[in-house]
Every structure is written in structure tokens, then in C-alpha cells.
Image 1 (cartoon, one colour):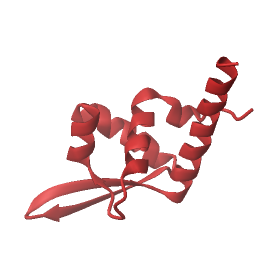
Image 2: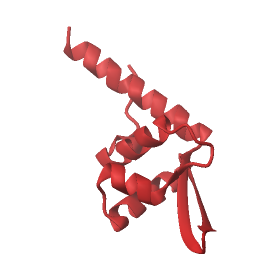
Image 3: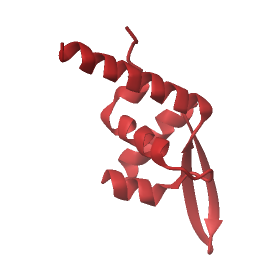
Length: 99
């Protein structure tokens, strides 16, 4: 049986990684868009993004668009691999519980 990824398993981080996994753009998703989708506060989202970045699961870029600061996040190859592994773990749990 697969094991849970304790970093991703936390509810907000799981939702962040799931949203980024579904986002097709190479540039990543803007912080404001993630915040809107997840209905998270700036501080809460920022804290979880920092944890995921420190683990190497997401890459954060900061730049300016029309003279306004912009922060974007995207999954790294490692992050995608870890997310897929965690999803496999969750599927195993579901298949065991439905037997």
C-alpha cells in the first residue's frame, strides 16, 4: 500500500496542488486566482505556498504586470509526481473501504 504524503495531505495544500495540477499553463497560476478559487486569505494561502515551495513541490515567481506586483505558482516535476503518488494512496484507501 502507498503511504500518504504528509506535506500534501493537509487540506489546503492538497487543494492548492490539485488546482495547480489541473491548470494547463506553463506560466503558473496567479496568487489572486488561487485565492479566489480556494476562498483562502492572503496569509493562509501564502503560508501554505511557502511550505510547498520549500518542499520543492511548487515554483513561485514574482514579477510586475502593468506596474503591479504579480505572484504566480506552478507545480514542479517533483510536485506533480508527489501529487500523483498521493492521489494513488487516496484511491487505495477508497478501494479498500468499498470492499
